[in-house]
Length: 83
Image 1 (tube, one colour):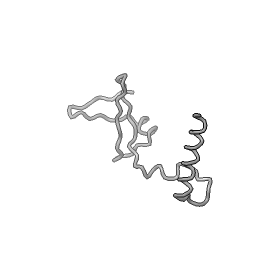
Image 2 (cartoon, rainbow, N blue to C red; image 1 turned 45 degrees about the vertical axis):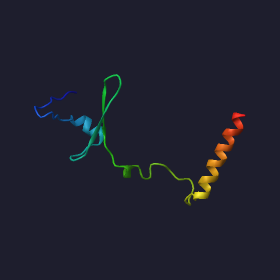
Image 3 (cartoon, rainbow, N blue to C red; image 1 turned 180 degrees about the horizontal axis):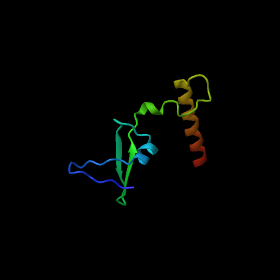
């Protein structure tokens, strides 16, 4: 697929691409330039769209103390393996 660039530097994203990316009028897109010169276009999604993407197998929230204990346990284990 291809699209022409207007004198204003604008182009139309072909419908199959818009459909594939789930783009609707008013949506924003991001462009990424790779070291090899290729360019990638991705939808710019707000962080709120990530809500609920991970399943919480625990029913209650994790406390600060539980987080601290888990970090300490992981650090201790890594230290033991390094010896």
